[in-house]
Length: 198
Image 1 (tube, rainbow, N blue to C red):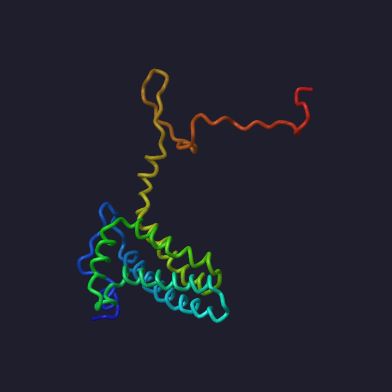
Image 2: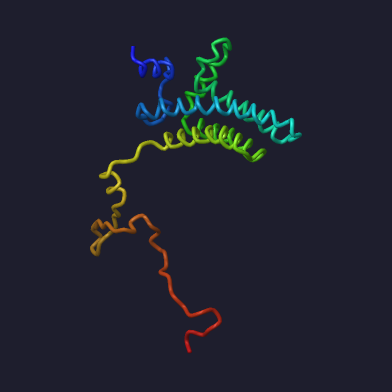
């Protein structure tokens, strides 16, 4: 067994399926987002502990931000790598429930978890730890959008169908096919306070 097969075996969930209505994703996005989530969770916990140690300088907001960041790292680790928590029975059930939801749910959850520690205690530890969780949420958001359409599909969507002189369908393609049709052109007037009619 090669190293790549071992890594993908650890990252893969045995009964994971694509979320309901979710588009099929390339393998490198599936495993890359999961790996990024695991790394982000590890660093969020590590730098959250660093923020907790800021109680030495009597910074209560950094203490609370560190606790929130460690909880966020734990939640991301539970959802991305439930195999790390084999001693807790409910972890697989929670991870399966979240996997069954659409990807934008996970993206929103990760982005929402990452923001408070950054605002509460702005520093490198909170920015890097929570920033990685936010980046994981951004990757999941891009996966939720789906893949880009083919060139033919985009050309067909950009083509505008109008009606000709005799009521027949006339097809036109131009640069402004999807822009509002009733937009007024810009007009250039003189300087403010001057009368342009004189």
